[in-house]
Amino acid sequence: MNIHEYQAKALLKSYGVPVPHGIVVQSPNEARDAAKSLSGDLFVVKAQIHAGGRGAGHFVGEPACSGVRLVKTPDEAKKAAYEMLDRTLVTRQTGPQGRIVRKLYVEAGCAIERELYFSMLIDRSERCIVIVASEAGGMSIEDVAEKMPEKIRKVAIDPSLGLADHQSRELATRLGLHGPQIHQFAEIVRSAYTAFTALDASLIETNPLVVTKDGSLLALDAKMGFDDNGLFRHKAIQELRDPNEEDPREQEAARFGLSYVGLDGTIGCMVNGAGLAMATMDIIHEEGESPANFLDVGGGASKEKVSAAFRILLGDARIEGVLVNIFGGIMRCDIIAEAVISSCREVGLHVPLVVRLAGTRVEEGMALISKSGLDVIVATDLGDAARKIVAAVRARRAA
Ligand code: GDP
Ligand code: MN
Image 1 (cartoon, rainbow, N blue to C red):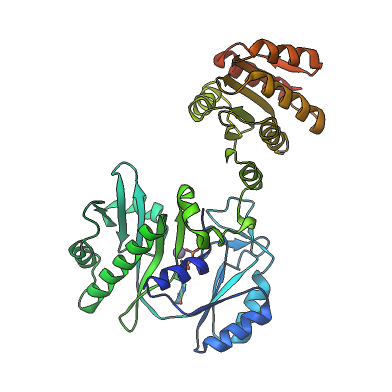
Image 2 (cartoon, rainbow, N blue to C red):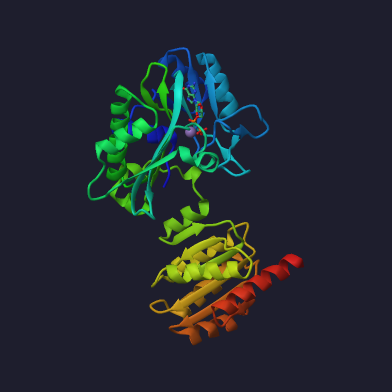
């Protein structure tokens, strides 16, 4: 789960990471009042969406208006807010469809001396939390990695020893920090590490972490992600969820306790067991098409749960075909068949459907399907199923 910048900054601040003063607003007048109460002669008005690259992004139809605006007066903050709220912001990370901006964060601006990159994430190949930092801050870390990989510094934190201060101080020196900044940097790393482990985070990223003209360090941008499997331990984090920023298919699936991940392809998959679901996705790719989702309906799913899953698949506007691949162990094939039949009747089957059932009560399940009169293509095994759905989808496209 991801959260907004203003939320990440509030959390990080509570752990001791220095961030600018800011106020979240939802109207132009609120933006003006926020700037007034922050005082000073520079303000930053920032679009709050779950995507980065806002500074280099633009609003639909307004190529000159980015998602991070520097303004000098409260009235200019109001005008900027007017130009940003309820409009669609497109950045490198949003995709061409962009995201609607519903909230802004108004911050006290600062004079920047240097922009650094600092992040912490779980590195699965290293099997630990890794710090990634760079003296080339402010630009996307992917670009730094491509154009000047020598400027990326990684420090692995041994989970049994924890973070050692000398690691942070050494890193600070390599980033070109000196004097009291070294200590400040080490404090920031320590605070971020404490927040990371205490909150079951998967990512903390500050880009840029700046050195201000008066020589102190400040996290000007912040992004945090959390391990969904740890969320049950953190009620306060759960409440930071913003449904506007989430895939509606995934939200609906979560209501029914389904393991569902939305993808970009066009073949909807309903499978039981994560391994079989992965194999099904692979074999669809092998046949030259792409899955619209990963979906594991689980072992002993009820008819209601399976029906919900099927409705989510059919309700997906980009779907061109559905593949049901069930190996009935605890799961009974006749329950799957009943759920598939009733949901097809309920929402209408408008795309080709291939069903492959094997295992417990498979004869009963297949009998129900053939009796149903529905236009179902039956497959005998996984390879057969993938070939049949791909052929059906292509035939429909050509027609
Ligand atoms: P992102 O583009 O979505 O990553 O948004 P950021 O919060 O990183 O802002 C983009 C850029 O705006 C930063 O890299 C800074 O160069 C600039 N910026 C943000 N806040 C300030 C500020 O207070 N003062 C100045 N001078 N520049 C700022
Ligand atoms: Mn940034």
